[in-house]
Image (cartoon, rainbow, N blue to C red; front, side):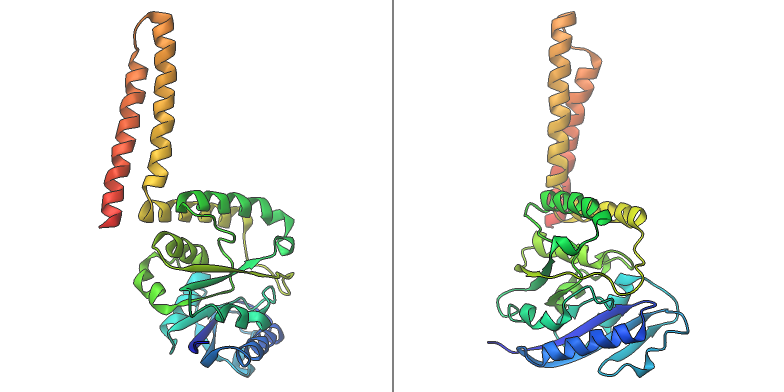
Length: 283
């Protein structure tokens, strides 16, 4: 099995010191029995309050943001300061099985991105529906089935994040962006089933606000990477409306009304917008 050198990035915000230390310990335990030759662990303190003193954390290098910049910014800071060609990310709240990170690194020889597919039972009921809708929409726009869009436990080649650096948001969701990039730009992506546990600390996710941001992000990425998947169904929708309206006009007035013509023009316009966007995207 091919050996790799790995940097693990842990974005941290107002997490209890003992929980973060437990996360670091679990990672070290896993990496010592993995195919990783050299590794480092970077915990990025994203402007946590003063009472969260991470200076005593053993086994990890602490990088601190003076102000809170967001989850994505924390990961990007870790990548900027990383020494190695492979990056792993995880959360510091105990939700991911960090002792099993070695299960993901085993696939790095054959894949560019390896993602932990969370057990659905571990995801809170209040978030399951929104996650399901997002996953299905993202799968359609990407043209491939996505088992887990935004799992926070994954391993990937650093060069991928550097190539598309400006696309990654400062806040949520770095992980969704990376998944869409991997599946729409031809990278080899592997999903590995993992357990998912109840959070040990306080969650800072805002369900309604963050879900809205996820939808906007997915549409943005779809328009950037695979625009024809967005414009083609919309064009067909307007075409069907035009045909139905045309049939109605022909039956009622023995001719075609202005709305029918407008709908036909809209269908063709949207179709050609999609073609132009696709050409720009490929270039």
